[in-house]
Amino acid sequence: MKRIALILTALVAVASLSAQTAKTVIVPRPMEVTAVKGAYTVTAKSVIAATDAELVRPAELFASYVANDLGATLSVEQKQKGGIVLSLDKELASEEYTLNISSKGVKIVGGTPAAVFYGLQSLRQLVSAGEATKKGIKLEGVAIKDKPLLGHRGAMLDVCRYFYTVAEVKRFIDIMAIHKLNRFHWHLTEDQGWRIEIKKYPNLVKIGSKRKETIIGHRRYSKVYDGTPHGGYYTHNEIKDIVKYAAERYIEVIPEIDMPGHMVAALASYPELGCRDEKFEVRTTWGISKDVLCVGKESTFEFIEGVLSEVVELFPSQYIHYGGDETPRHRWKECPHCQKRIQEEGLKDENELQSYFMHRVEKFLAKHNRKVIGWDEIIYGGINKSATIMLWNDRNRAKAISLGNDVILTPKYYCYMDYYQTNRPWSNKEGLMIHEKRILTLRKAYSLNPFEGLQPSEYGRIKGVQANLWTEYIPNFQEVQINLLPRMAAIAEVGWTIGERNFDEFGARMHHLRKLYDKNGILYAPYFFDGTDEIE
Ligand code: ACM
Ligand code: ZN
Image (cartoon, rainbow, N blue to C red; front, side):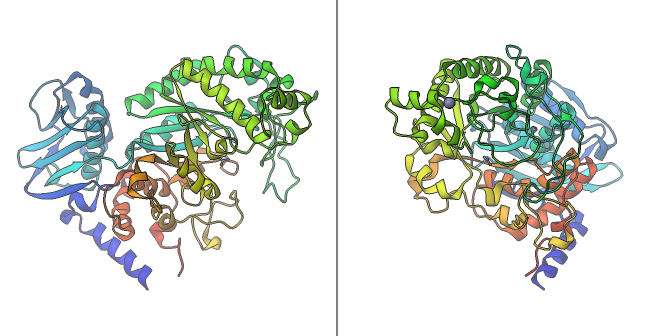
């Protein structure tokens, strides 16, 4: 009953469009929204005035976003006056903006161009939900003050288990921008495919970017393979193009080179990187491989430094993600090179051996003025204060927080977008998911409290939150979107919204965002919207 009442409330909310105010529309919810008398109608002739050269590009992007709503692409001029005026105010924080709509027009002021861009994303949602009149789109008067809770608001895409085209990656970035996300974590290397061209090591794409076939069905039960090769990689030029595309949308691309585990595609390309004298194949099934990089051989470090030298040329990001997850110790325990390294370096065990490796990589990246982010397993053998922990395992939460390092939250039961979305499995149309039973509904994703169990003095350690999409069972970009949305919107609000949050109120706003998705040809899962995601 409660559920039906909620759906009715949402439907009523959507039906009475003319009564919409910014408070009931924008996702993620702004910090402060105050109704103001009057209204302003944006017409096809409205001019966007960019008062600073840096605001011209975001203005042009906004014009393209609302072109369908207005039936025209608004003109952008670098000047001081217009129907929609964009300006900068250095007094505001770097991601803080104000958005004012009155009978005189629309004004967006931001601390930086990025902040103005966020204001424009809010305006885009208001235009999408606004009242269509003969003249244009009528917007109710409002005064918005807004800024994000957390600095890192991310989304991760695994392009290794399945490859997605440059156009699809740009689409992913477009979807992130709608939600005011600002960090694209690009998972580029894996056991099942190496996706970044490295000129010094050509076999990585010649051999490592292709697998001969892929398992059909769930890896736990199936022994059947599709017999079809799968592959793909991004050239340096394509990567630069994507980095620039993201930067125009104020999204930093953080590449992940996952090491020393999840390296079978590299081992297939250069078998000498392994502990044993054997040949490898790019993996054709999922799960964790016992084959990892040999940390005893100096040549492994030479390889990693060669790879990272090209990575830092391609990606200007402050952080490089160096992986560190799911690295079985079996090979190291049996390897004379690895055991010699443990002895010579006075390391206690294989956990410390992994830390030795991560520290050396961190040191190399520091020479290039880059900092590292690693999955929470990097804490096992000790970490430097300078490393940021990406926390995905609940079992490591307390320890990771107690260390005092910077933390980005991606707890899997809230942030992993590859679990089922409905607790009515029979209504799920996506077929196989990574876990046969685990369910992550929109409500559950929204319920993440970044500061749960922390003392206020510890809140500052939480630098961000991120939605992760692993793609073992997500073979195409349609399914990428359907798994991502609407749940990524919930994570975006967790990371952005300051103050109390309420799921039902969020849900009502999501019905507006859904329309924006529709208008832009963005796919999403139906379960929350048609009420089949939760039974009580
Ligand atoms: C991970 O999910 N292996 C980070
Ligand atoms: Zn070894």
